[in-house]
Image (cartoon, rainbow, N blue to C red; front, side, top):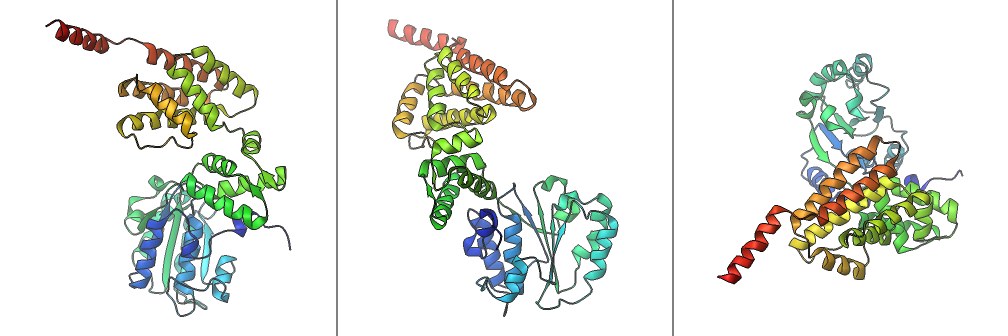
Length: 381
């Protein structure tokens, strides 16, 4: 049997297996239990969050033996056929390559025929936003009043490109980016099943780099197993994918809070020469400054993965700065992020952003002077 990548091997088979989308799973489960099934569903969300997986699980729940039921046996023939894309009653259509009026016309003609085996004939259209306007319009009437045996499931990463007339005919479910903690925990589970020693810090680093996408994280783990073998450390993750360590992020933030611009620039130089992804470093800096800002308002807020001792020191250093100053630093970094996106020399723009951030922290504002003078006046009187 040929090798199967982790993203396929560990793909969720039932509602219980879906991670990080409890709001979607609960609604679908209740709809099935109460027999309140819509005729059209729209799954919206970033890549790798489970749109196609959830659509297939919903199709299994609808067409399983004695269905519809939420707790089905994923190993029964009907469910296996759906999972492998062999079911005659579940048609998966790529909206990017089947986006013409003729393609939609074929769907309209085929909905008249009863399902071959299951209770419903299910049409799953992925990347539905790629359909042409004419194709959308051709689908409207069928989507509004389909035959009782027909269900439509759509998926898209760009819901704003779907016509409002289509959106109004669907039940919409927004799948959210999966939290880093959930991704890291699942990666550790996969590693254990595969006999791989994945360090917890390495799992966290992969989860952060996956940006909320479970499929991305699983693909990264697959690549790391090929690179490292049976043991994967955080250093391996940083080397392979060019990510920046949490300690480095804390080091840069500490230098900025101490207004030690040369030290911050030296760290940027070191990361650039090591081949790190500077855009990712800047994103981590924004997240960390944001965490410091929130911590000034809520002392229980954590440091987003930064070691506890380091986080405590950073919070103490940030106490001398008002919230407005930290907001200004975030604004500087956000502006820098926009410039770096299309720049050929990302290091130049990041260094300029560092200098501006340090200047922002060190500048004396008129409002600060007025506060000091007001305090002095109160003491004299």
